[in-house]
Figure 1 (spheres, rainbow, N blue to C red):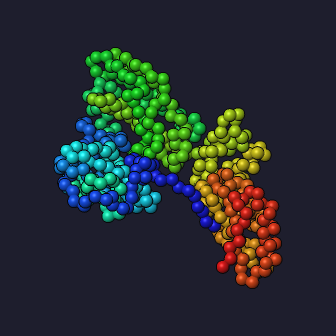
Figure 2 (cartoon, helix red, strand yellow):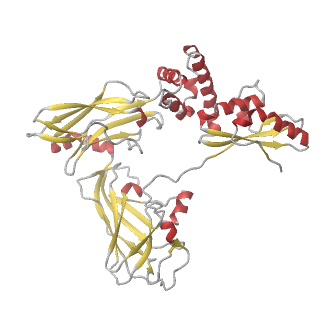
Figure 3 (tube, rainbow, N blue to C red):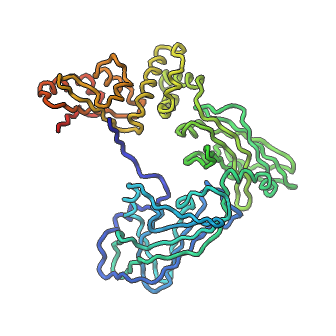
Length: 470
């Protein structure tokens, strides 16, 4: 049994240009020379008392051409091949590592073509997180090097442009970084400095569909009125079990905007709703949430609130019951989507659910989900899954993968078991194909009979069964 799926390039700050690919080539334009004058590199990080790891803290690259020749080179902010960044904390220095993703390396060949005019500069914006993963708080010194062109890069530019192949090194720049847990630990001190104390609490556990409501209390600790822009000056942080910010998690608080006025020593409360979709695609586990107040000159966090993202037996039963009723008018079946997303993690829990709690539709769905949970490991990624069958010498069919055969009903025929797989393929995100592998001395008639026996389920396959011969 094999799987295949079409995977998109990773979503990063790639700084790639579709147009750039049209102007790149591997032939040198007539009139170009290989000599180039020196290029200066400056790194800049916006000044701030500190940056919190998980923020898109900028790390900007400024290239300066001090000479009188026009220079051409390749800019890339994705694969860390032309560019390298190092960070020093105390006596420890660590460096960015080149990407090893094949798709990304292919894209690297079509990185953005850049030009430097005489006496001019050009700047590119990246983030610290594009280059390095910071796991400790402290005052860091960042430096970088950059090579204008690698051996397999050559921009196809007009005559008069020199190719910059040399390397350049920046001077160190310093900034203080706080990992989120250390940032929250400073909330009392930061709250006194900003004049604002934030605290959140929850009244109910996490609901897999509706999420959770948090009560946020603002307290004015300053001696004057505070004016706050709600919610634009506030954001949500969700941390995983390693206390890292969860990628692609909600950051904005969705509520009508208003200006808040808080008198000295007074407080007000607001309700924040975090929808179930915030964690629906994330692994089960304990997450932590805090609210961040941030302006140009003030910043302070709230306390942390734990969210236990699991499916209890009661919640699982409620999801199955709701999912078996089908989608509501004009809406998708959210409970079923959630069950499908986590089917690989629900195997044991599904077999502990009391089947007598459901009507006929619910019992059928529970049975299908149990089988899907058993099968998921044979095709973890959504996409095409090919089930391989051997045609034995007596003309009978067998699953080539015996581990697959063991999770299917032992009394069912091959065709019946295949039909069971195809009937639940939507739960798995699969499209199913069949490949037949005849053993030696299998006759053409036996092959024809095998193909004929699969006619009943052919409409549920992604394509007609394929015959593989040696």
